[in-house]
Length: 399
Image (tube, rainbow, N blue to C red; front, side):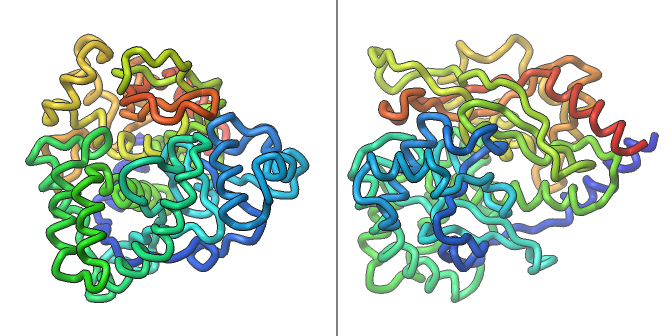
């Protein structure tokens, strides 16, 4: 009963959040990220001087982008010697997709709560189609995309948002109504965002509009921040016995979760790779173990939990979905969010332990060698024993 009451209180706080995209800012100013510090997805590395290969590749590119290194070999040495520090993004209130690494110059989207403007969460500002920092490769064209993002896109979007924040629930609902799951597919939500931004853009309007038209997953990172903001409200409830999951993430080596009752503690296990359809069926590169913070979307009740209403990604994942997934996944989530009554609610570690059902998350596959980049869509099955250990840890803390 104590846990049920704690979860009910935490859930009320989640439901009270109204996320809105408020602005864009460099990580140096947004979260006071110091020089020679990089942020990565997932739990902290056991040895941050030896990160997983995709994260290392993204970190190398960031070292070049910041001007800390002259070439890749120099960047590798800075990381291996600990002169450039890799830290957990979620410790700074940031969630970052796949292998994307955040440096001080990196532009972030800021999402805050319309009902509590001081409550904020951050994620990476996307940079359009083509090579991406989140894919964990070494393509030098990523540096050009980052420069365009920070010098052209970010100022234009920040000026557009100065005319008023953008309600993310409305865009999310539009996406769900038109077949998005809000993780593997955000096509309709991005189109709706594009339409909202069009009259607000000035000098670079045509260039930015063209980028949005070619980038159907642009809505992903603002929605990641929105889900992180909602789940962080559960943690701020301060109930030490709450078993709601507020993070589900991987760093390319370990998968980790955090619970609302002990939000500063990561419970981790060795991570497996997501499975799913490949962009190139002939591509034989091994997929990296789970990498990215975007499992926050699925933990909040979207992504894999919305596939029943997203025919296109559901069909793409059909061969990888477990039997009875529609009914079984709902059993390990809370009651629905009032604004999204068709979907399950927040992932509950106590229900995972009780039911023995493995939670699903729709996280893409990237190359485990830190070179191959994006391999395809992915579906990750989180181990139930991880949640059982988190419950056991929480019980000890709450006693």
